[in-house]
Length: 96
Picture 1 (cartoon, rainbow, N blue to C red):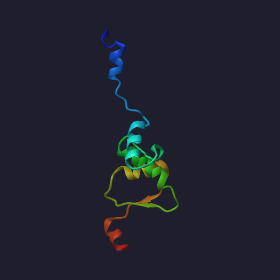
Picture 2: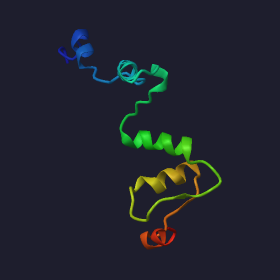
Picture 3: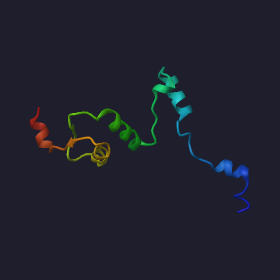
Picture 4: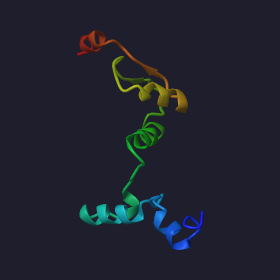
């Protein structure tokens, strides 16, 4: 407990990243000639997908994806009230 009470050690053990990823966004922005405000960094692909579903797929037409797909697609649709359909792959081929 004495060791854990050491303030310098406590500071050294804090490993949480900046929640806004300021440094990373600045480096990416500089590399691609953008402003940091134009760069989105997520906490893993699930967070990026969640924001994408919320931002881009909320419209009148149902979202279509195959019945064999990433299991979180239906979860995000249900979470954000997005109508979706999962036609079988053979049905998708018939649409062409």
